[in-house]
Length: 81
Image 1 (cartoon, one colour):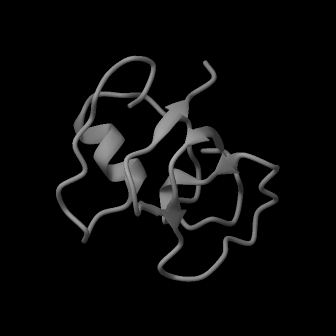
Image 2: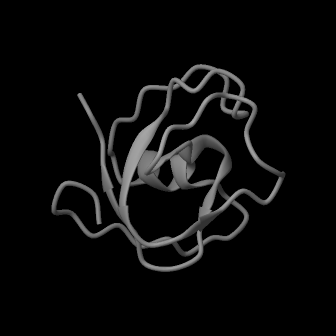
């Protein structure tokens, strides 16, 4: 769930960022590879995985980089404008 909107994640071949973009949810990004951290969002609840390994960009507590992660459980996100 993102800002009250349920967004199904149905394709494990895509990243969470790809899924959000498909649902017309805007997330700022630059590199799409976990290097810059521009796409950082807050994970309110749930669990994600970084299939290619932990990102290189700084990620604070309760933050994730949707450009390089996939959800493992149902998740709730907050995206700052």
